[in-house]
Length: 200
Image (tube, rainbow, N blue to C red; front, side):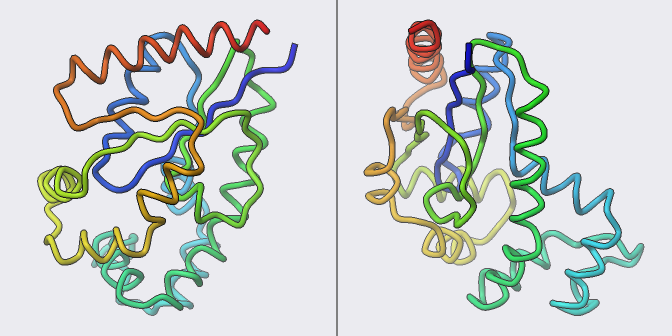
């Protein structure tokens, strides 16, 4: 029986990781494109080489590793550079997702794709789950978590799809403005729903 595939998306600071960790507690397999991107950059020297060629040595720290904070500043201040990074990374991430999917056996699985609505890659999925939060909540959370300035977070948010665009693309929506207990309840309900759907 084919596995049900849920694509999880949401803007910066919406709480995707927290929600996905709750699904993991139900032993739901998760493929996370952000984690794949990190591993690719850390383990494939040709990718870091391509990035250094595109953006210059400024993106490297003193140990010649990627300075992610520096890269973030560059790509969110320049649309062309952001596109150049996507051209380097996204086809490889897509390839890895397809390969990871082949090895999974479960009722349903989750693929975390923060830029699902913006992506030109054709990911396989049956439903889209949006983790959503009010803009101010996103800014507060992202500032707390990443130590980024509100101005940079605003730039990141304006480079991403709007809440309206994401909500229009979603089959299911988690409202993550409240306490953790609210989130847990919504995840539990969706887990039951996805188990039922995977059987039908």
